Length: 349
Image 1 (cartoon, rainbow, N blue to C red):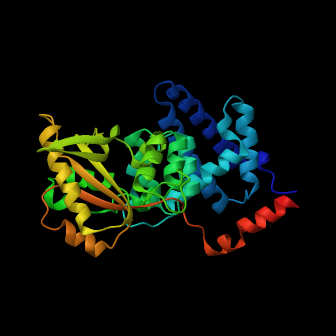
Image 2: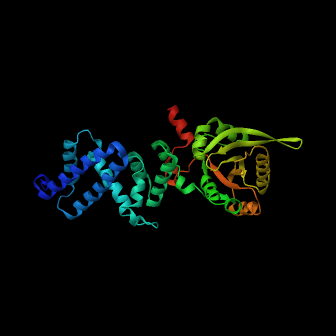
Image 3: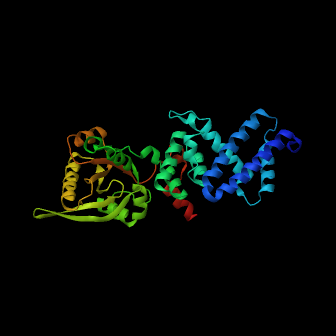
């Protein structure tokens, strides 16, 4: 038999205090359900860890606390053993991790941040993120873009933290702040188009058609703020007609966004064509309150130095990114997968 917590006076005193705070949080929940409940969770996580470290209550503390709180508050699902373990992990994830930004203020500013998103979002973040910096990035993005949990998980699993703002661009040189910062964060590198199912050789029109055919997934990958206007949008310049691959309007940048797709390696001449399109869009489509159009060139591969040279001295804002059709698997996993021939053989048997 382990230590008997039921007869421990200190435990009983602390349990009574926890029960009183739960009741208080329930009363306040009518106004601020999420914040009050998560603030309670935060203090509860800290106390569970502290009591396990300083007292002789041991590992049985979580089990006993769950039983007692569920008996007192049977309608609250948050006091199951599994959720109390989540609470403990949630607190320790932020509180004990040393990071470059001032997370020593975790009891103040960051806690005020993480209590603004639902509990399910918080759980997804701490189990899928490796660092506090990465976790807080997704917390802030969830607040800013009002992501559902499924969208949040998609963004974490697609590595948005490592891809956002990584494109080569001239935004800092040609756009005023804060628009240049927002434009830079808007573009990812690389874009992940693993929902398309394309393989082998394919033309730019096939890539374009596939993206438009799954425009919902495409917009999700592009990010918040993009409104799809159309493909192969005609622009008449002089006596000739030109066609833009994809045209969007960005609600936060308040400008048109011209997207050009290239299924080959980046070439400097690609920039000249996109620059031409941006001039035409600004001349023909830009409204009175619109900002100058932004260009995004998405290519199969690129040499960053070549891109930087091509963008230098340009006055139109352009960013260059790569795309990937599938996320690569680690070598050990890839080598352990059966080949197509092996699968066919197995099917025949």
